[in-house]
Length: 448
Image (cartoon, rainbow, N blue to C red; front, side):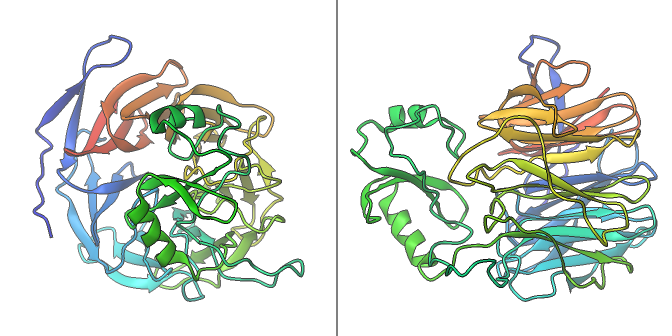
């Protein structure tokens, strides 16, 4: 395990794009990735993050001015990180619960009383072995102390038609576009640039080749051009592509569905897994993290990226009876994104103090904010957005290349506050805290 350094006294300055005063950030930990933040009813800010096979916890009891030295939650073999895979945390009046997926395709929980120091677990969340094969999950707590989790489930259900499942890649699948490499140069790719921009970097493009992307074991994406028989014509890293094919040659196509489970005893036991949504086209978007939130009345909202008629747009469902039943899925925003591949960007959702649903997501490289299926507001270009709100403001953070940008409902022009990735935001009663990660560690900035 790497040594842990607590560097909250070390400020790092970033200049905003608008030329305003420098923003001073503070480092919580000199290492770690995939931070996840929540706010308890008592106003305590809680943060979990991971490093290698370990999960760490840190908190702030002074309204976000400083954070405690990160402490170990658990070391769990096969912990999955990257592309929004990683730990999440929720807190009830008595218990803190962390969930995280592992390489076996299982979702695990760890529980701790709020005034204790020892975590217990792991406890299994999913009721069927290896069914969380996309490694994407989220958790929330309701006012009555019930915990609700959600994930993309890859168990195979009886097909709704008689067609056989094709033998192809699963989670780290080859993302192939239906059109040839020379068409639709303005189409956004999963690596955040257009086809045209990618082709300019590559140079000579094989004629009549299909563009695809594949990942290595760390989740890094590489481009490859294939002919109609799936032979490689040109590859960014041919050796990695061969390893990718070897790892995935026997996997079936992922039939991703949205499942949930609840816990009444602080995350130690979980209810039978419940199917919330199944796409009539066979699978939701496989590699985009779903979100689950609860309002002050215990109503639950689940947001996820769907896959319908070739479009991968954000949808949401709601439950007004504690997760027993859910509404018909409703699409967010007015536009659509037809893409034969996973953007690996699930967006974020919150319910503000007035009970209003606020969502943020990416489409074709642009960031949109909305609260319904009939409206959307573009706030910038980028990916990996996070949103939070209090009674006066809505705060949004997202990445644009290596830059970390923020906006509020009062100031819509994006402002740069740092460089890195994995941006998160948590609103407080007054102001908010922005988080992000770079090579120096996990940063935070408190803003009014």
